[in-house]
Length: 113
Length: 114
Image 1: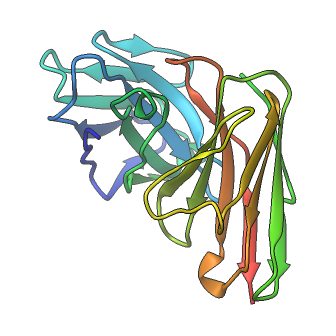
Image 2: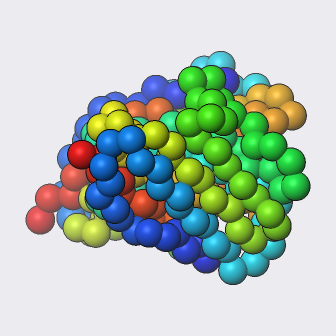
C-alpha cells in the first residue's frame, strides 16, 4: 500500500484557513487521495478525494501537486467544530485492496478561539 | 450518502463471552468492511464482508475470532468471540457504494471487556 506521512498535530486560529499537508511519494498513477476526519467518539467522516486535479466541495479544498507526491487539505475558515483527527489516505493496490482504505495515524488539528 | 446504523452502540462484556455487532445500511451497497480502533489508535481493517460468501480477512485477523456474516446487500454482522480485555476497542462498520466512491462509516460500537 502506498504510505502517507502527516504531521502528528497542528494548531490553527478560529476563522483562519487550516492547511493540512500530506506526503504520499509512492502513490501509483491510478490511486486516489482521500481525506477523512474523526471527531471524538464518532465514526470517521468523509471530506473529499481526488486523483490529479484540485477539488473543492462545501467542506474543503484539496490541492494535489503536479507530481502527485503530496497534497494539502484546506479548510478555508476553520471553526471550533473542525477540531478533529484528519486522515490522508491513498487507496490500496490490487483487486481486493483497491476497494479498501488503510488509515495512518493522522493529524490532530486543534482550532483555537 | 448511505446511512449506517450499528447496534449496540456500546457494551460491557465479561471475559470469555462473545458479542455480535449488527450493521444495517439504508440502501444496497457493493462493499462492506469492518474496522477496529483500539484506544488512542488509528483504524485497522479487520475484514471485507462479502455478500453470500466468506469474508476476506486482513493479516492478523482470523475467522474463528471474528466471524462475519453478510446475508444481503444491506446488512452485516461481526462477532467478537471468546473476548479478552485486549479486545476492548471501537468496532466500526463501513460501506462503499461503488469502486471509487467514498467510504462511509457508522458511529461504531464501543466495546469494553472486563
